[in-house]
Image (tube, rainbow, N blue to C red; front, side, top):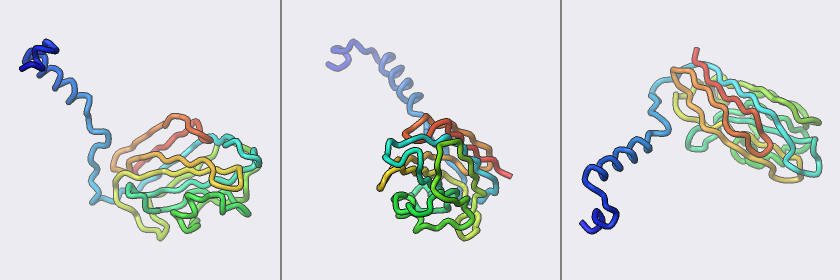
Length: 179
């Protein structure tokens, strides 16, 4: 009772406060039926920029998908020839698997990059619906560079997200469109 007296909260005031808290605690990621395997296309677009390394604007870049537990699913894009070793996160998660990925040499300039994912793993199997991580890594130094990841939903409905600009990546667009 002292709490009520100290802060002059009535029973109605406390109930109102509880309701406000409950409304503010909405579920961030609504449930997805992971028993389904919906085919579709994830389209990814972003603008790369310098990480401040000595080789800039030259850089290596990798984009890949992981499941929500952090297990590698598929590489979408990897631009690195001699300096794949600087893509430390991608190397440790993918074992350098770039099957069916867009590949190329070290990039000389920063520009808008695009890639897509067909909802299949590196073995060509359609993966279950659920929450996945889109991972991006860029290095312009002899070592680990910028690493970012973004959660997206693979579901029976279309989703679109434009995450906030982060180190080395801006104007990011992540869109899942089921078939």
